[in-house]
Amino acid sequence: MIVQVNNLPEFRKKALQWAASFDTLCYLDSNGFNDPYSKFDTLIAAGSRAELTANAGDAFDRLDEFRKNNPGWMTGFLGYDLKNEIEALTSANPDGLKFSDLYFFVPEHLILIKGDKAEIISDHPNQVVKAINEQALVRSAQQSVINLKPRFSRQEYIDTVNSIKEHITRGDIYVTNFCQEFFAEDVVIEPLEIFTKLNEVSPNPFSTFFKWNGNYILGASPERFLAKRGSKLISQPIKGTAKRLDDTKADEQAKQILRNHPKELQENVMVVDLVRNDLTRSAKPGTVKTEELFGIYSFKQVHQMISTVVCEIEDNLSNVQAIKNTFPMGSMTGAPKVSCMQLMEQYERSKRGVYSGAIGYFNPDDDFDFNVVIRSLLYNSSNKYLSFHAGGAITYHAIAENEYEECLLKATAVMEVLGGTRVL
Image 1: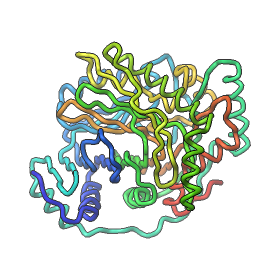
Image 2: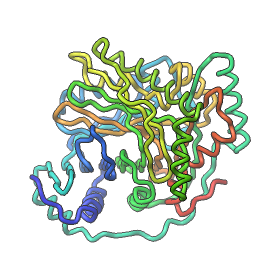
Image 3: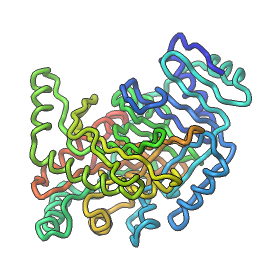
């Protein structure tokens, strides 16, 4: 069923509020960013007909089987620690969230918004439209200030970055992504209200509100991990960040500095090489190519350097296997990939979990699209644990103090929506 939408912003808010009443929900919003590979502006999947929960071990095999049994629409997430299934790796750092490594569900109701049309895929589409239209939009009270604790003090972070750089000097690795967690315990938040604010403060092309079993992912990601369109695989790694400035001329200058900054270019080209290598595992020979190198894209808080790498998928390769062949995404690991993941397990002080993982969908056309879980707030309402990670690329030219400031810059929007959060 397709309906004409007269007031799109209001319909979208009402639809999300209606969907949030279900125990299971996946909301994906492109926030109006123009993307040649997007199939819709907004996806809302509510309720669960069937679901799969799995941890590293046989998770990808189970997902492959689940997908074969459910060839229609399906949404879910892949946690970073599935790395332990793909390579001989472990995850032993503290984990306050206790999320599973993988969760997917087949929705009872699916809403696809594109332009001023909404497609309702449901056994009872008229009831869905009626329920959405009858919603009275509610805004909660202001979120009280939450005091976040860092896993690293500023000096500890700087010292750790310098230790990592010693590995680069020795040639153990070339570039890595080092992440730190900010967390709060025994806190109560209103997830839908906070996501709504986050999406207003930091609208991004891969924004996500994901809910299951009392757990929440509130995401403002700018990055695509991997998509499939027909026989084409697309990966768009981000490496390179510059702060947006209020003055138009200064802001334009910041973009140009980013575009020509040796350290940022080095980061980006290294991850492009890594992604090209990852894609060869799924590609027809000779089809891997860089469609765009060093593209500069502007978001509300930051400018980002984004490259696009594509290939033609090998015949008879399942979508799940194609994802496994490139997971975790190179922008969140480094190069060489396995060595970086081993070292970061040693130097980081928290389990990444869903952070550095991916959220997305499979559709009936046999296509898929997954983001990179960054700029995201994670919340377990059962144990009242709140968490977000921030990370950055460490190269030979990295300045530890600047990397710490970049982490805080990436966390700006999340801190703002948490009532002007303080880091203790």
